[in-house]
Amino acid sequence: MCGIIGLTKKTGDSVKDVLKGLAMLEYRGYDSVGIAVITDNRRLVVRKGAGDLANVRKRLGLDELRGRTAIGHTRWATHGPPTDSNAHPHTDCRDEIALVHNGVIRNYASLRDYLEKEHRLLSETDTELIAHIIEDGLRHGKSLLESMVEALKKLEGSYALAILYKNEPKRIYFAKMKSPLILGMFDGGSAIASDIPALLDITRKFIMLNDGEFGYIEPDEVSIYRFGSEGSFYKIDAEALKNRIKLIEWSPELASKGGYPHFMIKEIYEQPQALSDTYNGLAEDPSLKKVAEVFTSSKRIIVVGAGTSYHAGLIFTYFMSKLTKKMAIPLISSEFKVLESAINDGDIVLAISQSGETFDTLEAVRTFKRKGAKIITLTNVVGSALDRESDMTLYIRAGPEIGVAATKTYTSQVLALELLVIEVGRGLGLLSKENYKRLSEILSRADSYIQESIEISDPLAKYIAKLMNNYKGSLYVLGRGLGHYIAKEAALKIKEISYLHAEAYPAGESKHGPIALVEKDFPVFIIATNDSPEIVGNAIEMAAREANVWILKPSDTELDIPDNERIRTIDLNSINKNDVLEPFIFIPFFQLLSYYISVAKGYNPDKPRNLAKTVTVE
Ligand code: M6R
Image: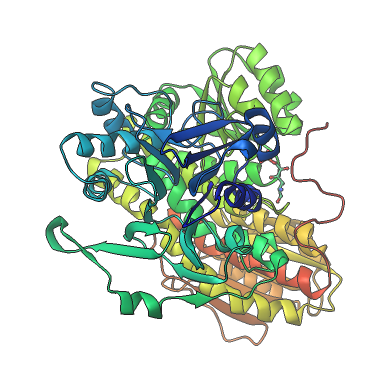
């Protein structure tokens, strides 16, 4: 996730509007900033650097620039750490094109291989490659539009692009695929941005672009194209475009949350995008294969993390055992001393942390490193402390998460970890070629499964939250196997956001103690994953104590659930028994439930009491 913006005007200056828009887009990323402008004497000027907007603006004098056509970018690093050279815009070898990008190019490695033979590459980003592919087209006498089309055909993954071309000073070219991009129209100019808030000061008139659309804007013209058959392309006619213009009346407060009342709900709804970016980023990332090789030849793997990241780690240990027959030992990072004496130089430590800055996880990693272990990190933040201190890093690419509750970063972590597991399975020869391909293909669609689950879960979670409005007691979230690991994350969400005591434990443990608490109307949520049909027995024993039981299950899982007014069943989407998809279909319900209970009780779900987004103290 990054923020992009561009403006082209008949008269006057666009730079100050671009800078204003970038300030509104900083929630999408803030590790480096840059702008490109075509000055009135037709020079293409690029200024960019690492740091947030306030810092780069001052350091590089961005406010001094002037020009009618300008683009800007605020970055959330995905390929390459946040450095001056990795900041956007990126240029071609001849400095004729300046390009900003939000998204992840999946076939980065193969594109880079062929481009670096003939081009001067100045950064480690996937974005810069696009500028050089377009340059190739121009060198062959094609127009910028044709060159961009040729480039788009070569790209796999997600992108929202804004491009300046020195020889066409009034135009901003654009293209969209799986990353958000909108056009804005106003008197004397046109604009482009990642989202509406960035342009609200300038216009209320917008066109929302669809995937696969590309084209250009000029001060008094908007041209949108689509691909036709066999690589041809055609222009969408003016009448059709007129019908797509929308008038948006949002308050600035609502606008910064993209129209959602809170960041948490926005981020829950961003999960399909986050999963798609995570998949695209890792599917062909050579680092994934390298890390998998390390795991393949390892004796022991210790998985450390805190809170939600630990819960993602549990899911990793489950699938490692199931699909690779390898034992991975989960460890809450603050408890690292429990294993400290046993760690030695044959060990591999997988540290999981959204922020990459969690004190406890860093302490665990530093201690285990001193004992000779090799450290591999999975994080969302390129250049974070864990990233820097690890031997190897994988990135999830979920974009910045503002709400304190981990939502989209959890599901992105799970997806990244599952991709790693199948890579290890393939390396060990335990997954046949066909099986590996099948699982990889299923995981490539995790985004649409979670989308469907969010749609199914939202009204149900709202309804149950209403029923629980006056409830102040405890509740259980039960599962077995994979279901128990998902339940742990579900219970954490309810605790931290709704302030209700929620406990997750393996359902088989009920009779060994916890069932003593169950009395009339005690809420029990049961996560019925495919690996545990016997969980129905646990539902029955709870109902017999007059608990209110909700069984959640994939719609295609058949369970022998007796007729019992105390047991209700929630059918989520069908997953054809592909258990790797189960975390994505169960967890949205609990994220939404905790959110709606919190809102109904008048709490702030974005800033739960006593909690901080990143815990950098012991
Ligand atoms: O940044 P990290 O993933 O290392 O953070 C670890 C925990 O503090 C974090 O997952 C926390 O449990 C969540 N914010 C809960 O939603």
